[in-house]
Amino acid sequence: MASTWNWETADGLLGLDDPAEWDAAYARGERSLGTAAIGLAFNCPLAEASPRILKGMGLADRGQRGFAYTAAGAAARLNGELTPELYAALRAEGPGGIADNAIRDTLTFVPYRRLPPWFKWQSARMTVLDKLEYWQRCVLDAVENARTALRRRRG
Image (cartoon, rainbow, N blue to C red):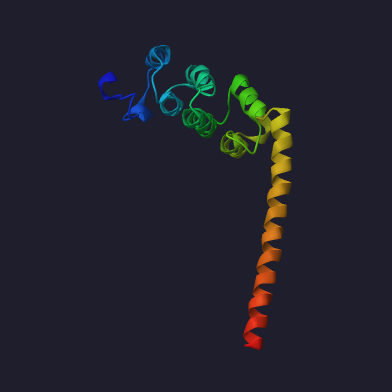
C-alpha cells in the first residue's frame, strides 16, 4: 500500500494504516504528516495512533498541526474516548484556537462520565456560552424584524 501514499501532495494518506510508515516519514521530515495522522486515527487502534497524533500536534507547519488536532477529534468520534496524553494536549491548547473543534468533538462523542474533570467543566461552560449566543441571536433577530416592520410602516 505504500505506493499509494504521496507525502508531497497528501494523496492517499487518509488511508494510512501503518504507524511505522508514519514514523519513517516523520524521521525523513516529510510534509503532510498531519493529514497522515488523520489516516491513522481512522485506520489504527487509538493506542497506536495517539503517539503519532501527539507528535503531529507539535509540527512546525500550522496547517499540518491543525490536521493533527483534527485527527484527535476523529479519534474521539471513532473511539468514544481519548488517551490521557491526548486529553492533556487538548487541554493545554485550550478552546478558541487550533484545538477548538477537537475539544468540541471530544465533548460531543465521549460520554460525559468518561471525561476528565477539565473537560466536564468545559462541557458546562460551552453549554452556557452556546445558550447565551443563541439568546443574543434571538434578540438581534427580533430587533432587525422590528426595524424592518417600522421601515415598511413609514415608507
